[in-house]
Image 1 (tube, rainbow, N blue to C red):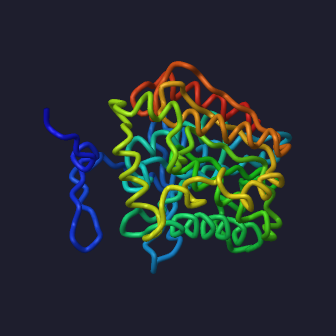
Image 2: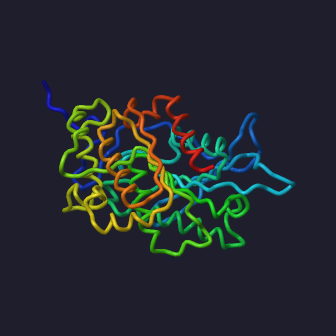
Image 3: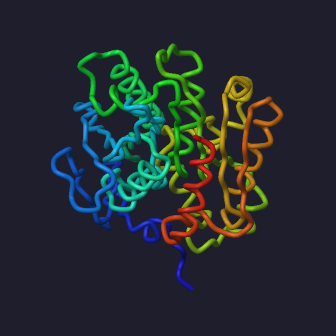
Length: 320
């Protein structure tokens, strides 16, 4: 039997200079811009540079028709989204990420800001958290700038800002939410954070990790490699970026988190860690809502549209 190769599983090659070659190109979609609407088009999107020196950018989505009441335009919740991809893969213009944000913007309805953060190992943690802070500060700047991005200044409700992430994106959300506790974000108010199948780890294996070590989609050697590529050099999986539950300061800070939604599936090797996180939040007095389903696996929404819809419904209920 041939030895399992996590690089082969992830379709990446390891380069001597500390970078990786990503062998799979995913189909991409351009932003629509705000020109003429196509027949049946319900959402428009545009790209904005976040930091040219870091090559980071965001894609903003908004419903083509903004609801109004009494001839006044309704202000919509603002969702800042961080995509999945194990720190090393995907962009916000990949078709699946674009389509997911399109749907979210239309169905909630909401203004969505999807953040194209830097990927590991070319940029290691905490680079991704810094990109998230850049995105949040960019939104804050628009809120007070009369010449700010009109889609944000005219349509977003700054008292209802939500941080939403999937997998490693959910890790970014939790770490960013903890960082902003010590910052003045006004006029923004974080209405809640959404952690969809959050990606955390630790050196000591959990029961679910051992039980699903040979998981078809997300086996343990792959999980370990992703952390190896993302964590700061010279650290291990008990670093607080990976294992926040092992850090006393992080636990104390969690007490100050606002509303939180955690979504997870029983067939995910990470499920024990996700449930431990919820338990800790409850003990710290956080208003946490847990939506766990016994059936399903890590990243199920990428291949099962019904699950993608169910997740979106949880998110919509939480935001509205």
